[in-house]
Image (cartoon, rainbow, N blue to C red; front, side, top):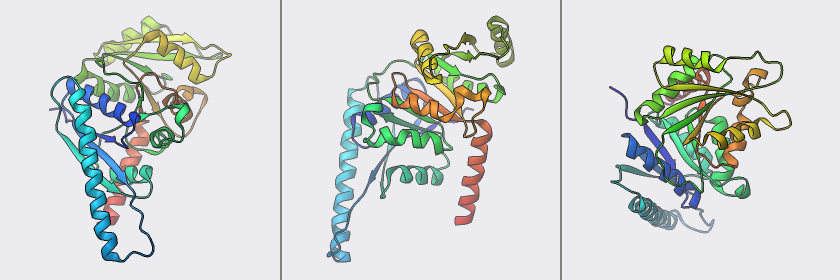
Length: 299
């Protein structure tokens, strides 16, 4: 029996965070998922206030923010087509939203994905513009970066950017995500000068036989005058996927050009298509071990 994914949606009441929730609602219309909407509030305390006065003020502020969170989520759900799923609302008091998000995920080991809106390169001062890249870089949890302009559409076509090195664990993880959505997959490899040429038809047949899932392989020559991110964006425009998937780790190499974190960050800041960034399988396991060790130390 397949586990119901738990998806964390950070909410700051901006248009960008609304896009993250809209994508999560679309996902919920195709597959049963558990949604958690989290809002971070920072309540400043004047130095002249007594403890009692501050506690009264803080409790009132938290109640006001929680009501605002409920109204915001309800308004987006009402505009969405179809019945709204059950959504847990969480309010966290903290100084830094990105630190609070990481700490919450470490406490909640059942969080499978973070789905957050991103404003793009023009809005770097906005919370979920600047911090999307930080979350992608540091989270041990898969992150979905949803463009502010996102409008709901079925998740039917997924483009998977791959270096074709040690692809098996990545493809299995990707199929685990795509199969409940009944989404078609295309593995894209952008070939650079000096790499051995691979045959698309042979690889497509191999992938379908090995994984028993409709997964095509597309191999294209890189345009040498363009950056890695621009080469990838050209293919996104040509294929028109519902979302793009990358696997990323900290250590770049010649065979991991598509997977270098800065590529995922740049795309998340200039988005037109939702981007799902998985940690490389080895890195995700290490992150889970670190979270487990941290939890054991705190018990």
